[in-house]
Length: 314
Ligand code: CP
Image (tube, rainbow, N blue to C red; front, side, top):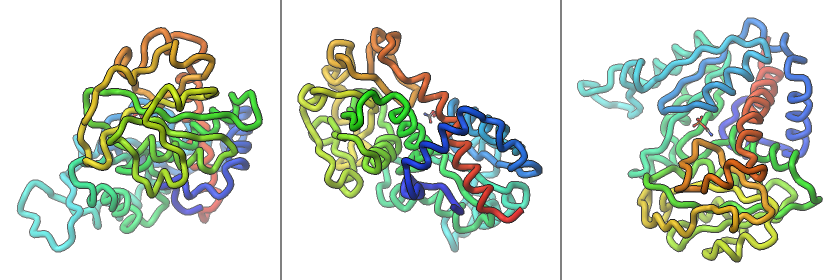
């Protein structure tokens, strides 16, 4: 594997999950693999989990991580070709990506969508430019349309926690005051489509995800109906895809309560707004898997870095 930028880079999700479980059992087993190798983590946006767990994953493999907050600390980057750079941007991605490649053996990038320009977001301008102009492998730490480290983490968590051969998994929209990206929901959907689970999505009218991603997955506009017999309820807000980036509803009736959840396990990628997305009683109960998910971020990232290192010339 050269890059990890999408759930589609996973060739066999079941074997990846098994390998991630082995890494979790013995995280330092491959401590020599990344010796004298450097992981660069470039953040265009905020992060707690991705920032720390990806560094931890690199350290477990013997790599040296270096981190930069690109938006705050680097020169303003230009992504358009042929621009007369006499405005706010001081460095072109062509040079920047090539330069970072001199210092790093793998580059991991976080760059959120604009949520105003659908075409630009779907082109994955930042991630694509790094893939194009860097000379080393690229890892997606959440881009405009996907969060494949989170998707792999969530697949691992469900595989570990499942009590039945083919659990029912529901991805449910929940209200939020701000316009949020589709990335987590997209990657979770793609991961579940690769697993042997009964997977459905629940969201209000006007909130269907990109139908090219949801494909044959059943979409309910009635949350109660979707939750029937659920084993896992994965909750996330996203802004409208159809009316791109708009908050069309903050209906509190879609918030997750203990009563709605029933016997199902609750999942969320975090950070989560308490009593907006989900009530305290759920997060503070044994039904919540959010800390297990956060823990698994390390092993998902470690597996991805391991596969890239194994495929890279020494
Ligand atoms: N779930 C997740 O990606 O968390 P952070 O935004 O804190 O990295």
